Amino acid sequence: MRTSILIKSLLIAASLPLLAGCVVFERHSVAVASPPAEVVVTQPENPPPQQAEVMPAPPGPLDLWVWIPGCWKWRDHWVWERGRWAPRPHPHAIWVTGYWDHQEQGYVWVDGHWR
Image (cartoon, rainbow, N blue to C red; front, side):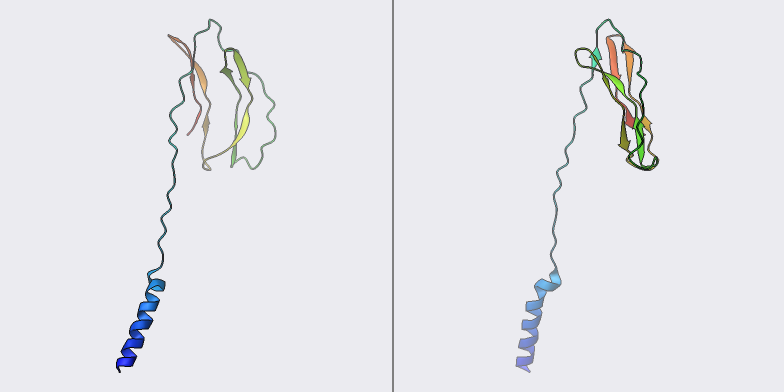
């Protein structure tokens, strides 16, 4: 009987690591982006009018992709940034286009965003 208890105890002790399992914690670094610096154009010239663009075919179904129109960017002078297709972050996401807002200190860029 003592041998039987000893064998059972040894079997239980040997199987404890298997029963306990293994818990793994993953650490994910989350980069918190600081908001972009506000772009203010104080030049006397206004942003040029929107350019007409030829929209290429979407890279996939329209419920997954949305066209983000091109816009003027300021890089010591006005530069046209072409439009592009972007994947929707969720099926019903709508892109709100960015724009140049005329304020007291000049033209201020208001970023586009998903809604």
